[in-house]
Length: 377
Figure 1: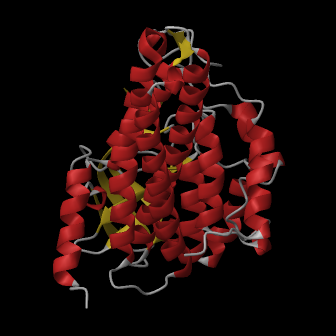
Figure 2 (figure 1 turned 180 degrees about the horizontal axis):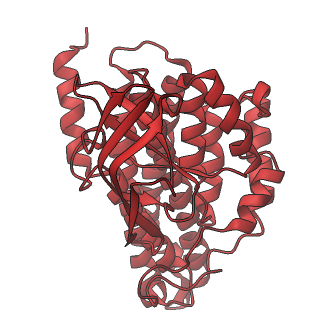
């Protein structure tokens, strides 16, 4: 396996590190001390900096003002964003841009992609369905009436829905096909109910009651929803990896300075073994993430469909990020629960990422079904 990144991808990482270097994880109130959401909006100042650094336009084609990079580059930037708990809809906007660019009509792409890249149009994605425990594409019904589509249904836990401009959401037709609709937040028939994530960020339940949108705002390609779902999932795995790497670095720094019986606790065998196990988790998370991102980017054939590589990445990310933060809390002792220290914030974010990815057992079952349907020769 060759995990060497291209010069363009490495340049994106350097640009991201420069922008995120000025971001402090504790720049908003602690989720442990704040009832409700920790802030009403995402970090607009950081969003504009990302736009100025051309990081919002990374996955957008040059003809629409972007760099034309791939999902791997997006995952690299997302990994850096998670290290500082960047409060921006970078994953949702990037995944939406990649999907629209590939599957939407030229007219819609020309209208929205340049504005997404410039940071003027903020798009989020609804991908959790009605309850979070069912296929998202079954939560909204869509049928066509002349030059319009009519949408009815509910999508839950939509990130930043109250402050973004549009929501890209899946819906199913009477014929059983899945379409993607780009719905303005303030469109007639759209109502939002406040929700709050485990990490304290604002979410919303989006209700659509006979919402009518033009046909050009609906993506009907049958492959679009799976593509969007795969990018969202690998992006979430990238966030988990970046967060885990930062937490392990914090743990290493703390245990090398914290002394017990006259020695740094990092020199104790039990501490070193636990930290080593978490390092192995992170390397497995990294290898499976890039395998999935590479399959999505290249559409290379393999013994299993792309969904198999995505499932493996989800298994490791969901389990791995939980183990990393739990070990960090254990090795920090009571200091890990101190709300003046940022570790508890990373723990809350990790739990939200784990919930977003879903339980590893469910992904193992999906992987088993794929193996049964595609026996390895």
